[in-house]
Amino acid sequence: MMLDRARLGSHALLIGVCALTILPFWWMLSTSFKPANAVFDLDPVPAAPTLQNYAHMWIAIPMGSMLLNTFFNAGLLMVGQVVVATLAAYAFARWRFRGDNLLLVLFVGTWLVPFQVTMLPNYVVLSRLGWLDTLAALVVPHLGSAFAIVLLRQFMKGFPLELIEAARLDGANSWATLWRVVLPNLRAPLAALAILSFISTWNEYFWPLLVTSRPEHTVVQVGLQMFLSSEGEQWGPLMAAATVATVPVLGVYMLFQRHVVEAFVRSGLR
Amino acid sequence: MEPYLYLVPAIVLTGTWVYWPMVRTLQLSFYEWNLLPTREPLWLGVSNYAQLLRQPEVPRAIVNTLLYVVGLLPFTIALPVVLALALNLIRGRMAGFYRAIIFLPVLMAPVVSAIVWKWIMNPDSGILNAVLEAVGIGAVDWFRTPNLALWAIAIITGWKLLGFSTLIVSAGLTAIHREYLEAAVIDGASSWQRMLYVVTPLLSPTLVFMLLLTVLLSGQLTFPIINALTQGGPRDATTNVYYLLWQFGFESFNVGLSSAAGVLFFGVFLVVAVGLLRLAERLSFYDA
Image (tube, rainbow over all chains, first blue to last red; front, side, top):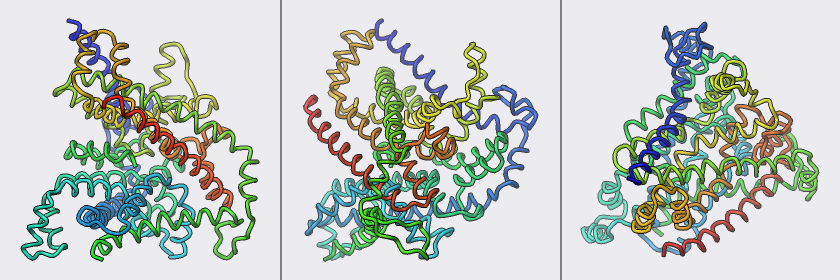
């Protein structure tokens, strides 16, 4: 009896919180399909849905190239971070060597360093290299991900050493062992990591804001901010642009929900 | 030799883009420089630090940084505990469904969240103000009212954090021995309070971890929202220490001052982080 009442209360609470969670998503979508004369109506569903906001937004900002830039940025970093972290994690998991603990602490320590503390010197370096407004400026400084190294090391530590030993006795060198024995067994954490990396890069705002300035060279998040400040409060087209910037991430979430959630929880939001 | 070969890319990248720039920031904090490649940085000694402490915005930014932490704690600790307990009572499919929904805002980009909430909280035609008017409170200009703007930004950031925090607390809850929880439920499931009193001490390591995240990350997580919505205004009402640092560097082009602020604030955050980590260790005896 008592338990049932507590359960009922829990459902009520959670339904309320879920409604507040969904509201902004729904309002974004709903507004994006409303014609200009209906944007200020409070209809929950557009009475006469239209794509004119999408058309307007697509012409007002170079959305196509921004999406492409964002896609390449997120894709390259996804592959790059996983590769760099796999190699490093393998070294930590397989061998004990001089300075291994110190190195690990130094990698983990980067989690504590706020981006704002390193941004100026990094900006200066990129500008001297002439990399500003290029994909390289977006990608290269973020290739080393402390979280990725720590996560993969954890999974590799759990890997049965006998298998590695067996491969060694078979004459496989460490490189072949990594590819043929270790990695095929780490598909789940690798996938989780790749997805997390893709989503966080896709949503990244400040670094691209710093190192890109021309609309056709920037990413979609910065484009949105430019659109907001240039067009002011054109809510219909703005919501259309916001929807386009969000759909890829939601798509990834729907396809790989469990991986996404687990990876985010482990990452501590960095 | 072999392990070092595998570590070369990670070491080079971390050294180049994290540790070396940290050294450079420390170094630049003793110079005057305006980012122009044609100008040589000028040695100043510690006067950037002295100037920093005299900046009128600095006390405001420090207070705001603390207020943001206060504004976020309901979303990173209080509500997540309640929601995690509720999810724990329900379990099964519906719990999974709720969890999946609550997690959604974590995935919405900060800029997108800022823009969508700006529309919802719009003083003339936003849906929130329509509701407030309907219940007789009247329209509120959230982002231009100095006393409200900071809390509006904290709420938006909190909305984004709630799903993540709930999952962390849920994970902490499942790590607690089942019997404690069941005993509490059987003892008096109707009394939320009793549940809270049993569970909170057992959860304390998780809660300290969440406190640590909130303290360390609040400055950074509010950063894009501030930038998109208020640029620190009105009259510095929403700025925080990291936002100030950004303005010193890329709006006033005062590299020395920005670097000094970076060194100082990072130092303080580091001390707080170490303190909280110690606390977390000491509290973990509860569920031994």
